[in-house]
Amino acid sequence: MPTPDYDILIAGGGLVGASLACALSGRGLRMALVEARPPTTRPDPRRLAIAYTSRCILNSLGVWSGIPACPIQTVQVSQQGSFGQVQLRHHELDVPALGYVVTAHDLEQALQRPPYPDVQRWQPATLEDISLHSDGLQVTVQRPDGLQHRVTTRLLVAADGGQSSIRQQLNIPVLQHDYQQVAILADVQLPQSHQCMAYERFTTEGVFALLPMQHQQATLVHTVARTQQDTLLAMDDEAFADYVGTAFNGRLATPLRFSPRLSYPLHLLKAYQHTRPRTVLIGNAAHTLHPIAGQGFNLGLRDVAALAEQIAKAQCTGLDIGSPAVLNRYVKERDWDQLTGIAFTDGLVRVFGGGSPSLRRLRSLGLGLLDALPPAKRLLARHTMGLQGRQSRLARGLPLPQPVGEPSA
Ligand SMILES: Cc1cc2nc3c(=O)[nH]c(=O)nc-3n(C[C@H](O)[C@H](O)[C@H](O)COP(=O)(O)OP(=O)(O)OC[C@H]3O[C@@H](n4cnc5c(N)ncnc54)[C@H](O)[C@@H]3O)c2cc1C
Image (cartoon, rainbow, N blue to C red; front, top):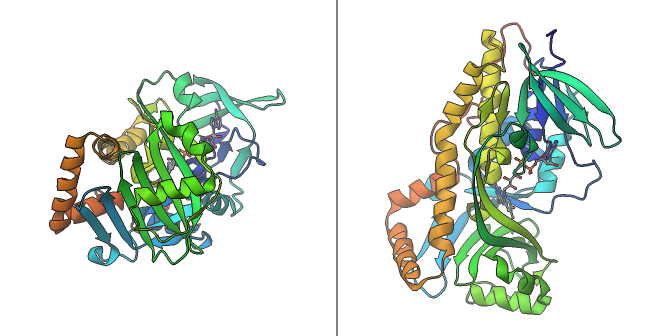
């Protein structure tokens, strides 16, 4: 096969695919990004809790300063009807904030703002007919008007989300679990300052996470049994404000004014393999998590930082960026963080999502103990901040290695 058209073809221009394009731009790589959604699609309404390490990575990518973000300085974890509660405070961990809250739309805009002359964008388009050749992959870029382009690449990165068609085309098996739950989302205007405090509240109805946002607003993520979805979406604003106020037992100042509510189905997905010849799965295509701990994008961004580092190292040593050696190093580096991220999130759903009296007693005891044990609390906080395990160069604020003689971007 002659020299491939691209060094890297990224399928999916969501937050994870766009972050990878941003991380690798300016390194002399020929890249293309294929995104199925038309550019005019309505903004992503999600609000994301960004872990401390993710902020460091986004800062290294040069996009953080352009994103309006509200710091989370304290997290209060409590259970309705019991005294046990945990408070995590930023100064106990010597960090300016435990995390930040941003809108997915602002993040997406910031990632797309710089012009990337080395990234060809195919949008709207999808990828089909993947076939392996000696020095690369051949794929079809399919446009909705019926036009097709047959292109070749050294490496295909599947960042095409939880329903990844690349993963399905390559018959990669997955572990899947339907939680039979939905997340109900709404923004709320607060009557007084939130003081950068986030709440996680466990009740018999489900879990309520209230995250501080800019301009005295907060955002609510309420995970609840799917059978409750229609009732909660149909409630009038006053009844919904009462429902939330009761769950927080008067801890929130009233009146609470909510925006229209949205709902998302929730499930767990983990691909059993993350690579195939010249292909790697990252972000939700590799692992889709329940949002109870706000870890999904954070985990995906750490995939991006690790993959970008392995690609940069391969460029420096003259290795083929799509070779098994490079992809296996990436998988090995990400394995532990991904497994613990999935186990932590799934464990939280099982322990904190259930409403049986014995689980409630156990949780109450656990929360009380955790608050009384600073080392355990510190461990929990470090995990949610993404500080466990080896930190990538981008997370440590270091640039990616540059091939000798190449100017840095
Ligand atoms: C209610 C809720 C709250 C959340 N809160 C948080 C939080 O607080 N913190 C956090 O870290 N995470 C959170 N998450 C998770 C986070 O939103 C996801 O992990 C993250 O957006 C995944 O990004 P991605 O780019 O991997 O996938 P996606 O966002 O799914 O992007 C995939 C992209 O690929 C495109 N695509 C699909 N198929 C194709 C194809 N065949 N060809 C080309 N393009 C294709 C899609 O159009 C899409 O743009 C939350 C999730 C939910 C549901």
